[in-house]
Length: 329
Image 1 (tube, rainbow, N blue to C red):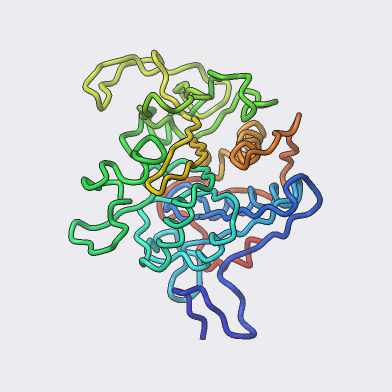
Image 2 (image 1 turned 60 degrees about the horizontal axis):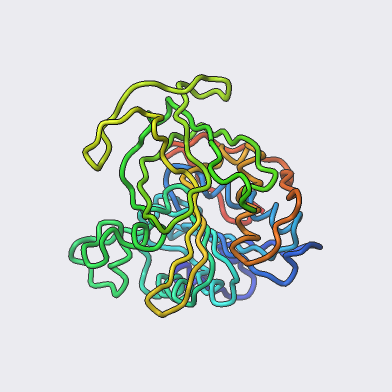
């Protein structure tokens, strides 16, 4: 039978992950691993589409790994199993969209080794709070948890530059409009105004990041809606207007890790599966892939969708049950 935990396979059965071999393009010969594992924003739908774009339009080999339950089905609520993590051993870049994962050490070790090797990471939406360990955890990786005191704020705060804080816009009511801060940055090359129905997260990344986009809180869920008004008290105890100043929603960071290697990091607090319907957001993610790998960003990245893409709305327990990875190829 299939050993789901270890991600191994006997002859005649199908791996619980999907692989898109790179077609022609600048990315030929480079490998990307995409980690889909959040309960709310349908990463199990969005990342397979992103993988298709990167493979079919740009030539990258892409492997998508999912949260898999004991029966072999995709289950974002299963926080303890991400088979296929051995793919990170030969990956050149990792794209992660995770939330509160608590993997077995044998799986988590693959991720930690990738990070410590100084390889590039693209982190989407809830990845600021990707890992969660109980207070009595004996795991050697417990410091990665978002509530860690050993490594304050865990992987999100220490590596990506921010942890989970709060919804700055009203969740499910106020959308996000991207406002460029660094229009000449290669990641924003030919990227127009980004719009997504996910709300702005509160974020206060450290001074060593380079903020590329700020998030304007929009009064509704339509791209034509006006900016929201009102005030909120932020986590620093300061009362401020919703959009003055705006919260950062996309940034880069080059960080020297504990092993002495430097990771090129791109973070955006957007990128729910529905946000990927926005061409400009897709182009930012594709451009970030090139930037992370130290490659020249195309003059205009091809980000046209591959096949049919009708993402489900975000929300807890709204994932499509009974799906296996091969159903999302």
